[in-house]
Image (cartoon, rainbow, N blue to C red; front, side):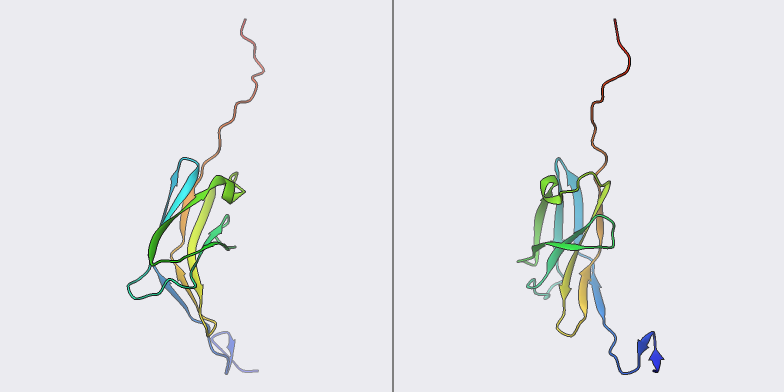
Length: 122
């Protein structure tokens, strides 16, 4: 079998297009995600995705408009013990290509807890 650029000859390379238009910030009890698609790019088919390791993303909601916001609450995250959460927009193409936004991260921080102290004050 002949190979070119790590693909068998005759197999089309899958293209991935990227754009920058995603922002996220930590707020009290949730992450606020904002997006702005490039002008002329339709919103249909886009999904907002979340990851706790920056690699394995899962869809959390469909995007219905070219710009907007989404509030990802700790209850929705289901894993708020993780120190960082990552977000991106993704849209599969018809020919196998994908369109991705930039990946943004939000540092969640550790939750404080009150533990009993081994000392007694008399």
